[in-house]
Structure formats: structure tokens, C-alpha cells
Image (cartoon, rainbow, N blue to C red; front, side, top):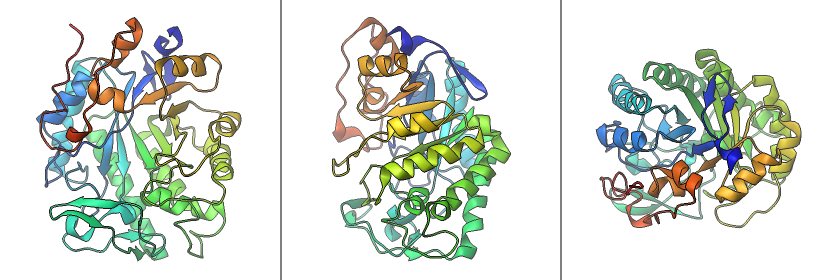
Length: 355
């Protein structure tokens, strides 16, 4: 357990422990996508994490995939997020924000009727989306033209500028879970030709352009990246996920990122393989693991050099003082999935801390 509580130099910042809070969509920002005081309270409660990675946050207007998720493209949103960063810093914590474009997971009912966009015109088929009209099937997206992609890169760049203004310690680029950047990476969703399709180096072009733009703003040592090569959530597949993870691990060394955050498994259990070993072998920076780690496994993995830190998701939902519970071996509160997206304080800020 002592390995979880050792300090870690993560790019430009020093973490007091290696227990990170994973980004968790909670849909508390309302229909205007405005971060608010309730969100500030939630994150401040969890400031004992070595690092908080705040939830997926829209970099551009009109690309909502969760209905009430936050954005960071307006002055009002920047001011709203400042409440959170101020509260977390006052509580002694550090916080990054996850920058995100929903891609084909967006829906016309959430975006004024606008058709979602993607690398190829292939719809998500293994789930439905929550909308004001109840759950609805995903729609077929429009294939983005090559000449539209620089504007998306610019959207991420401006979001990084806004994140800096909002007081975040850094940003995590969302390249996972079947959203736009991940859609370009994997050959099951990217079946285009040209400079952004085909070979891995082309499929990774948009992601690398985004990393360059965001790093130019923040400094690469304040930029993290999350990937999920095995995850089939949002109808994602790749013909060679281990090969993709290995290639990314090798080429991401050029960026000097604060960290690489890897989801090691598949939410749905459809795809299997070991992506962590080749990533650890080839990636020279800080490696963060995620998905299903216990405190014991996390500590052992760090001790054995397999990882540098672990991001915990659901345990942080229900346990605002998760590091202290790990430290003393206290029981964990059980999370209530019925409240994950219900929009109010219940199941959000009312989980008890240890007395």
C-alpha cells in the first residue's frame, strides 16, 4: 500500500499520492452545459486524490453526447469551471479537465437537429442515447471532409486556452471510448481514405494534431492522453488493438506528455488482450492504468514497475475520501447507479466521508 502513497512527478506537477480520480460523466451541468456550484462541491470533496481528472467536457458548441455534460467553449463556462478549480485548490488538490468531442456519439435531439460527424458514415449500434425524448437509437453520422479537420483541432486549442483561464492545472485529451479522436484511431470506425485514413500513422494524424495544438497552449508537461484500445463501448472495434497500442506508445514519446492514461480492458467483455505490457515496454513517460483495479493490485503493479499510478472511477463516485479509506483499510461505500446521471445532489455530493 505504501507505493500508492508515494509522491509522483507527473509532468510539471508533483502529486502527493498515486491514486487518481478518473474522469466520470455525471451530467450535472444542465441543458446550458454550465459548470456550477454543485459540481465545485463534488470535486472539492475529492481533493485528496493525487490528481482529479474532471469529466468529459465539450470543446465545441453543438456536439453534445450526454445532454447535460459541461462545456468549456464560452466565457460563462470558463467562469463556472473557475468555481471548481478554486474549490479544489483551496482544499489542497490538483485538477485537470478532460477535453472531448463526442463525434458520432452525439445526437440531433441534443444539438438542435444537427447531424453528428465522424471519420466515416457508420452509426453506433450496440447502445442507445439519453435524450429529452427518452432513449433513442444513434443516428448515422456525416463523414467529415479533410478540410473540416483543422477547425476541430482549433476547437481543442481554444478549449485548452479556456482551461488555462479557468485555472486547471492541466488537461487530458480524450482519445478513448468511441468518441471522435478514438473513432479516427481505430479501423472499425475509420474506413476513410486519404491523409486521415488507412495506415495507423494516418488514423492517428488528427489526434497528434490535437496533442500538438493543446501542448502549444499548456506545455506538453501539463497534457495527458487517455486511450482505450480494447474497449468495444460505442460499437468500437479494431483489427489489431495490441498493435495500435504499441504503435501509439512508441510515437507518443515524441510529445513529452505529463502522462498516458490507458484503459486496460473492455467495458462489454467482447475484446481481449494485454495492452498494458507493450505500452509499458515502449512508452517512456508516466503510465496511468485504469479499469477494475483494487487498491492491492494497484499497489503491487506500481511496486513491480508495471504502472506509475492508477485512476479509480466508480470507487471515487461513492467515496469522496477514497485515499484515506485505502490507507487504513476501511470499507467502501457502495455506489448507486440509479443516481449516476440524475442531475441533483443525491448520489453526487451526499456520500458520507469517514468520521
